[in-house]
Structure formats: C-alpha cells, structure tokens
Image: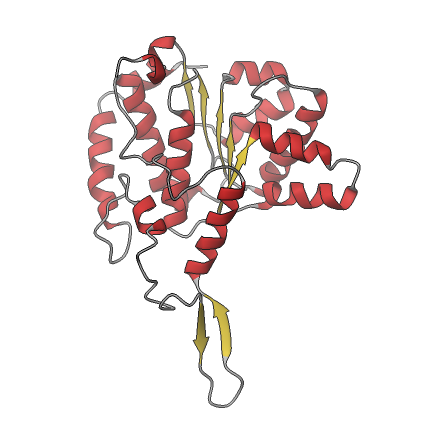
Length: 276
C-alpha cells in the first residue's frame, strides 16, 4: 500500500492548486450565503442568533389548504437541531466546537495533503455518496488532526443537509455491550449506527480490543457496506494493522475508502508536541 509520501508525490503538481480551487469554488456551494466551505458551515448551521427564514423560528411549516385540512411539517432547521442534540449526547458540544477547516493547522506537506483530501471529499460527496467507494479514513499517528478533520467534514456536510451521526468508539462500544442481553435495546442502540445517513466513527478500536468489540463493529460496518452508507473513520490503526486485527472489517473499510485512505506516520506529525 502506498504511504502518504507517495500519495502526496502523485498529487504534487495539483495539490496546492486543488486546495485553492476548492476554497474558491466552494464559496458558491451554499445558496444565498456569504460563507465559503472553508470553516464556514459551523457558523452557518449553529449560530443561535440567526432565525430560520422558513419557519421564523417556530420549528414547523404550515401549508394552507382551502379544501382540506392544513398540513404541518417539521422545518429543516428543527431537524438540524435534533441532530445537534444527538451529537451533544454523544459527548461533542458543537456549539463550542472549533473543529472546523478554518482552525485546522497546516504545518507540513502531510497536513496540507490531509486537509486537501478532506475538502475534496466534501466537494465530491453528493456525487459519490451512493457508490461503494463513498467513505474516507484518517489513520495512524496520534495527535495528527484525524478527529479534527473528521468533525470538520461532518459539520460541512450537515450544513448541506446531510444527517451525520457521531460515534465515539470507546464510549459507544461500552454502552452497546451493556445492552447485549436485551435484544430490543441492543437492536435500538445498533440501529442508528447501522442506518444513519453518514456515520462518523471516531478513534476506531481505541484501547484493548476484544472479540465482542470486533463483532459489534463488523455488524455496523457490514450493514453499511452492503447498503452503500458512507462513513468517515478515524483510528490510530493503519490499514495494515486493521487488516491484521480482522480482515473482514479491514477489507470492507479499505474497499469503501478506496482512494480516500489517508495514513499518517511519525511523531513529527503530532501537533500536540509542537512548540506553541
């Protein structure tokens, strides 16, 4: 498998130019918005002071019908608030989050490459979302911004109307195992991760991994694999280590993320060790 240096070299002629083009082109991604994709979706989606122009802040829309009963439907803003609440319950307060593209620190070629891949994924998501290769994975070095980019991708896609679900691996796997003896509770807890429009798996296989953990992850990923449901995955495991841990899980991740497997190696890429 190619390492990041080879991948970066392959894209070297267009990498920086591609990022600049993405930055410029994405200023037109959102209708009637002045913000560009670069770090803007968070502000657009979660600014509490903004009142929704569709429902004027009430959370629903009434469609008048002179012949029949009026039809009341939830406004898209209330659906976003619902997603936001679910993220909070999962441990990520998006109101205070600074994990956007604007705040992602580029300090070498690799971090620039990672950012460019994340931006390119957002731009192409609408086109690839129903394909087998519709996912992206940030793998390897601790402190290299894998979670940051994963969340930034989700925030921007949520701004475009995609309902993303956040799965912090260690917390979720513990809760799911607590429900394994209750079939109904188990299916309910698994369902949202198996069928969500977009799933963000953060720190996959962090900590000690048991056979039960692998079985649960396989059930989630296999369902998404069979139904072409996209994922954004971060993990300290490289692709080779994922395949060694469990080939069934690793090979499905590899196939779904083909062309978007970003591997990061070396302590020099740990931003936490950089002088501030």
